[in-house]
Amino acid sequence: MKKTALCILLSAFAAIVAMAVTPPKAEVRKLYVFGFAASFNDTIVHFTDIQELDSAWTDTKTHFLELRQQYSYQLRNFLWGQQLPNRTCVVFYDADRKKLEKRYQKMRRLYTTGRDGKAHYDVRQAEGFSFTAIDYRPYMADADPQPAVTAPQPAAPANPPTPPTTRHPDAP
Image (cartoon, rainbow, N blue to C red; front, side):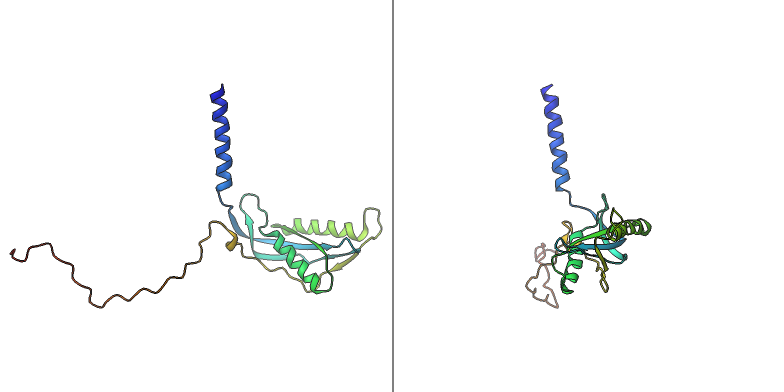
């Protein structure tokens, strides 16, 4: 009984270690995204248009958008440049545009009319903003590292020396 429990415990430990060691797999997909920004200091909220990203990196197993926070930072930095600091930005995405449009309409309806039917927020469109695809390859563990810079090798001579023979010079 103790041996069985020990074997189960060791196999579970080995499986956990194996999952932790395997690098995350990512793939490039076409996604549709939109951004939402709000502040706790005022009632202004911003929505971006639904945009198509041709080369968005997603996790192969969960289909989560890799580097989601970088896309949120793009929106935050844009709004910061528009003299609107301290915004909390969220990025919504989906591979199916219709599903994302449905989510977009639901969010917009929530902030334009509110649950009680009254408008509590000043909803604005983030005019002139567009998301830029982010290359995930530098963040991947299994990506090929950049080649190291090495000292130049001397050029090979034009006529390489002849290798020594193993025959005795007096042999016929």
